Length: 473
Ligand code: AMP
Ligand code: ZN
Image 1 (cartoon, rainbow, N blue to C red):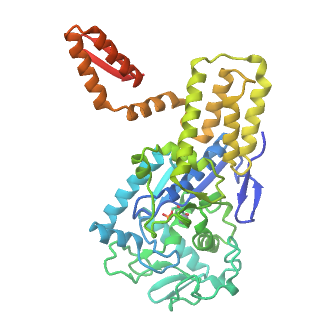
Image 2: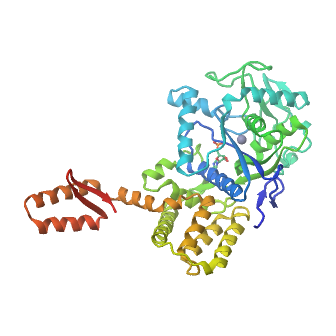
Image 3: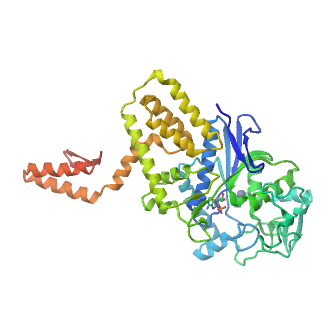
């Protein structure tokens, strides 16, 4: 089997993946800030991470996956300025921050389920890990990387020799305040808050005791603390969207390595953006689409998943309803072909070498930095080929679907459900009533005609002792 290669942002190249402990992978992915629904841009990143997990599993690795829930401390700018996203959302909706967090966490978990995304082994709320964050800040402080100013505890980047190595940041040429709002309490504009004691917002409800006073953590510390608590001081893979490279992940590395004095994470993977109307889809632009909205418009969540698989995760993906229609049509064609294959699962034992070749091709693509568009092309070849029998095809399809996650085994059920949604049940009920009347009146030809109409609608009618029942064929 071809070895798994992944693009490591830390070294800007594809590398053969080698876990710290043979056969085991420890993975951390940045979770959602739960002040609003996830938009389909956020969800693109979670689909990419799901493909990564499934590919690791397919390669035989045991996986431990932790994801956080940001329910505290994320400001509208990633760099300690702006307003608190959670507080702002609670104020707008006249709810407590806790209610907001609970509502959007549940909505997000529903999205993950509908997208057939494998659930993390641990989905951890930041507010439940404050002691772990305080412990980590203490370690960073003990090693001399912090200072107190203006009531907050800051990370001092001048103490860190390789700050910005993930993003290749050229600190000398980045003007203070050009990217980051100037904060007079900071020694350097790139320093960042580990612990706030001075709430910038009078209604901040979430506060905890700490050695530095009552307050709340900065956003970056939560991911370092949660990942290190559950995965250890050194682990294999850390992921997120590319927007996290220059600030959030850069600061995570600085904190964690200040605490341990050693290299923290071996592989950093980042997903490119979903683009909508020429811009990164984002909540702040108020132009974000949710999965629920797509569902309401008649696109299933798995159609959106298929749409995401059509682009490599390191390439921008433009969202449009035309391309989503194309994805819907393609996925339906795949399902229709599978249903036909299922009807006659005859084998062709002499074609084993082709079966093996298709499998090798598929593995070569997924193991080439998760090249899903090319992996989908192999699936299409399998669906169309006459070199192998239906039994071999079917086994390959189900095997590939361990990575694709399109619920291909359920194709017949899914197509039936689609037809059900498409059928106008009021019309069916009316036709059935008309047919019953015709039968009462012994008008057999009219009754037959109505049955024919129902048949054309894809409806099967059964006359029993308790009346007439119908179902989609
Ligand atoms: P947030 O809740 O803002 O921390 O975002 C959750 C995840 O979605 C992060 O990994 C982001 O990098 C990612 N993300 C945000 N916007 C987009 C987008 N337009 N396309 C793809 N991923 C995104
Ligand atoms: Zn994070």
